[in-house]
Image (tube, rainbow, N blue to C red; front, side, top):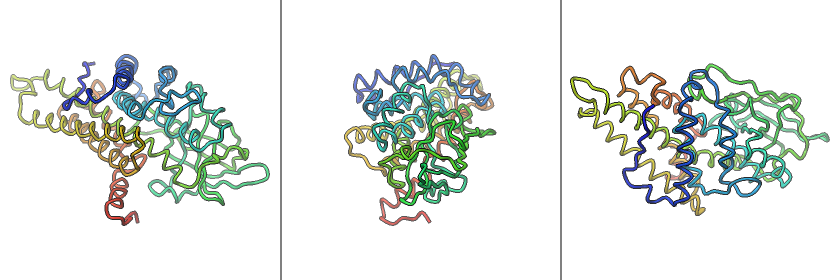
Length: 388
């Protein structure tokens, strides 16, 4: 494994506080020492490195941007820097933390009752429980309002029926945040593992996010108590708030993946010789490296400014869409070009670009596809929705 060379062409480190650099550097060492030596094997076998969960919890990274209930209460910028380093390791690891924090703990913290917060958040923050988020369905992806999952209020409680697909952590989750149509509109519900009629079979055969657990959630007339509804959840807007938090982390994570590919290919072309000189001495190679450095620098500036805006509560969902759309698609292109620059060696798990390219194909799709985010921006610019 070659030494990681982080790119900081515009001296962005100088814009970070001492606390921000400390958090980033701590997670950077964790990735170098605990993740990278084994992640290729996990990717090849299609297994998640669950042995890292207690370490993530011990570092205070689960629900790290939330206040109270055992959460660390760090800034959004710190959260972004952590996502960057985790995805430098692998998208599957960042996805786990993102789903645990932004899509499970955040909705409980933002829309749950005090009893729900006290019951679930400390266990999730300690990594004793794992959570998942059920919105996407077999026939409802970019149009979540088309979901067919329903929840009916009865004297006994809520009866939930439906199926969710492509759910990170689902098979191993102890608690699921499920979104369903009710007579009052779309609401969020909590379903615990082991509830009768609830199952979460793992989805196999993936070529992307192999070091991640991806599942189907099946609710066959599941009965949950009346108290298992998230009382402050109101319509799809509540679900979108969770997704915005997740998309923000993704926009930083993509920088980590891109930086990993850039570092790997830079080391490679400096050492690999063809025609009696290093590949790095050729104009074509230097042109591609210059393009990568430029694009990564733009990604860094977008993410940092967005983090500062979020910390000062000056952001909106359109800004998050722009960052997720731009940074992930750019990281994917960087991974593809880096793989090509390495020739046949580029397909080996000894190097990171092919693994990151495979992962980023999924990241480019989930939590809003590239095209949907462009339409979000198009509506913001013109005032005209063009989704259908």
